[in-house]
Length: 265
Picture 1 (cartoon, rainbow, N blue to C red):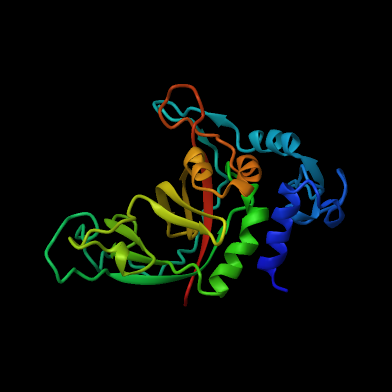
Picture 2 (tube, rainbow, N blue to C red):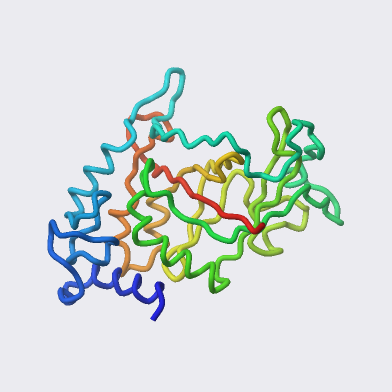
């Protein structure tokens, strides 16, 4: 039995009222959500808590507010900046490859090749600092198994040089269909996101940090729930907590997310 199987069992335990034997009681120690009784989730403190208790803790993370001059409420993120740039670029600061807009400006074939193609070997949901944090316990094991099984093909194509002061752009490529007939790319300021066998989603306003290999962005929770199998909707609505006001109307309507990427050497 592999991790994918056990995680699916955990999800079934959460959504099925007839499976009390596979879990532990409220307040007891847990590692993942599937350890807990139906109606409970594994909190960041490693204890089984109710959905409302977990949601309340999530809402307390990060400190919400509107930065001066901004129309968007955002989650304050922890400082994860590293002094070491993990992206293989010219460390002298020179822009060795010029940005050409090859993913956003239509052109005739043959399409221009990117400066760099980097294969993503693992993607994980960060365990703190964003509105989708509770999806990490349920989703990360499935995502890891999906990468191991070749079910989550993903590459980052770079146009330009990822150095300070240089212009660069990214396209997220799963297969050749993500580069369109006019040579533009499907995912440039967005990113595909998959929990194999459960959901296919889009990360909006996706931004990649080459110093941390993290992607930050927004999830449309309503869109995710609409595209999700009915058997998982009750669980998923507690896993994605809206914490960003994307249109400045005073109502939080998007879920912030942080993804951690590992690339092939």
